[in-house]
Image (cartoon, rainbow, N blue to C red; front, side, top):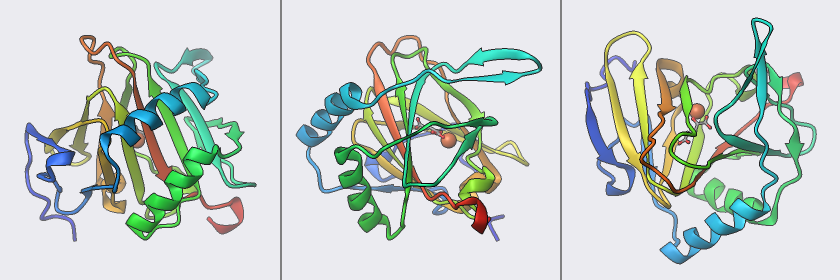
Length: 211
Ligand SMILES: O=C(O)CCC(=O)C(=O)O
Ligand SMILES: [Fe+2]
C-alpha cells in the first residue's frame, strides 16, 4: 500500500514551506499563531516544565540520555520508553490548551505529550520509531517545534531511501501511522547550534486493558 513512497534522497526542505509530504506520511500543518505566541510558549515551557534527564540500563550499564524530557498524560496512562517507565506529570495549563488546539486541527484525540528539551546542539535523539505497544497499532503523532532550528532526518527500514527536513520555531508536523511502521527518524547532534529547542510530541496512549 505504501510502496509508492517516493525517493527523497538527501531532500532538504522546511516543514513551514509546506513543501514536503512523503506521500502524506509526514504532513506539515499550520496553527493559527503568530511568532509572539511561539516565543511566549518557548520561554514559558522552558521555565515551567520540570525537566528531567532520564537514564536507562542496557547490558548492565546505565546510560544518560542526551536531552531533557517530561511526560504529561491523562490519569492512569503509563508509558515505557526504552524499557523505562516514564514518570507522569500533571498537565500544565499551557499544554492542555495546546492539546485542545492540536486535537481540533488534526481531528485526533491526543491524551499525552512527550516534551523534549535539547539544551544546545549536542543534545540529540538517535534513530528510532515511536512504535511502543502503548501507542497502539497505528499511532498518529503531532510534533511541534519551538526555538532553535534543528534537522529532522528519516530513513526507510527496508531500503536506502532517506531524507531530512529543517524544523523551525512554530513548525507542526503530523507523522501518520505508516511513518512509524516503515521509517525511523532522528534529530542528530549539531554542535554549531547554541540555542535551546523544545519539541512536543502529542500522542494517543492506550491503557493496558485496550492493547
Ligand atoms: O525532536 C524532534 O523533532 C523529534 C523527537 C522524537 O523523535 C520523539 O520525541 O520521539
Ligand atoms: Fe520520535
